[in-house]
Image (tube, rainbow, N blue to C red; front, side, top):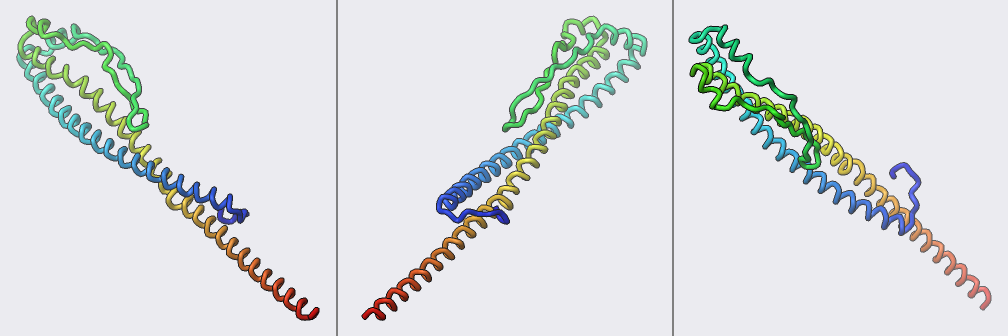
Length: 212
């Protein structure tokens, strides 16, 4: 309202003061939301970091077991066994609500790991390799889900920060300046009214003295 025509009325003053109260409440809610989003962000960050460490360890063990199986059984036998493994189905991606932010929920779909009974007919080295890599698939999906959620949370944190900053540094000071302007005009009107009353009183006294 600064730079705009402000109506110096008591209704406008009350309305502006109510807007300041609402703006402060909104600012508090924005700050609470941002704090909650940051807490959720760090929690997901820790989980994603743990999953990445687990993934690296699983991959290292998986490749080591494959090299061992290849040395023991030969590459041809290993390739023949790999052709018998089930293909990965397409994943299903839905959404979930995290502190008001829509984040993806990744479902592994119809992927079914090779049951232990099916591994009994395979050499031990190949069975161990399959067992190592069966756990990697779900870890990769979990990492993808959490890192996508982290990006969306970070975007929402920045948006909430900008909105809170606009309320705190632009809207509230502008409304407070409007209140000061209205009060200043009230004071001017009061001074003008007082001066006018004094003038009227003086003229009345002069009129009375002249008629006496």
